[in-house]
Length: 329
Ligand SMILES: NC(=O)c1ccc[n+]([C@@H]2O[C@H](COP(=O)([O-])OP(=O)(O)OC[C@H]3O[C@@H](n4cnc5c(N)ncnc54)[C@H](OP(=O)(O)O)[C@@H]3O)[C@@H](O)[C@H]2O)c1
Image (tube, rainbow, N blue to C red; front, side, top):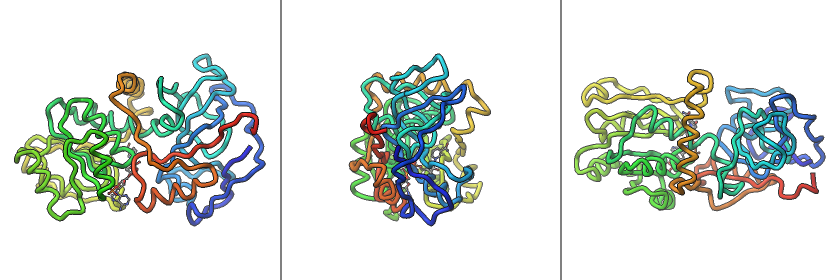
């Protein structure tokens, strides 16, 4: 089979290369599935992982990639059988992979492999943040930063589905248009110096009740947050970890609320199926439609896809089609 195999820490995605004759994985162990990967979700952390800069450093040689969709070829668990369409997390830059069945779910009805490949991280992160942590209510104002990005685009749709009034921020005209298409009521370019004023104006002076922040804009956001507002700390896409003067929180009764979705499975495992049940209902109802970057990559062009994420030119979920034809495995 074809796969991207990493044998040493790389300088960046440009050094990734496809190997044409990699051995198929061994028989899956108990608790695992063997999956033909149809599509892979690309993430910024893939770049960190191949550079040896991510918190998880797999032993060499390893197949990178973090999200996939595909077809079960072999199953060792009753919940899945060969032929099932699934998505999940695990190494994904290969035509066939073995993955833990615990990290796999059935593809929601009507979703393509491409749409399903990037669901596993973004949607539960944004749902858990907005619902479990911020308790966002219908009618409230929700400000979503980096609204055209992976987690941001999911947050816009979920906040809208919950009945909130959504104000989106992003850094380009194209991304602001994308945020509007996803359902944002107002879209503001946060490269404008006065963006917090624009947000306040859009709420008729009330301020936003919830801020969803994957960028690192907590301090600035307190300027346009309402009394009793909740600011969700999701990530630091701008590259530095903010230090926020605490008086900013005190003055308006603001709560700063962290969310680490990946740690739920260890700390509150009962919440994981609860979140997925709620999301599947929203997928079925048509209220959530995964947004994809317009260019779909292939195994060979994954480096370009990762570069598009790294230089901030992509939006929504960046996807690569991996294997299309079982006869070629
Ligand atoms: N807490 C959790 O459980 C959890 C789960 C998943 C992801 N995350 C974190 O959330 C963050 C976003 O993840 P994602 O998958 O949505 O990433 P993404 O698709 O790459 O989107 C990130 C967005 O951040 C904005 N941005 C602002 N400043 C940037 C900069 N200096 N460099 C790059 N991007 C910048 C960009 O939008 P504009 O160009 O519009 O500014 C970009 O679209 C990451 O830090 C990730 O680690 C956290």
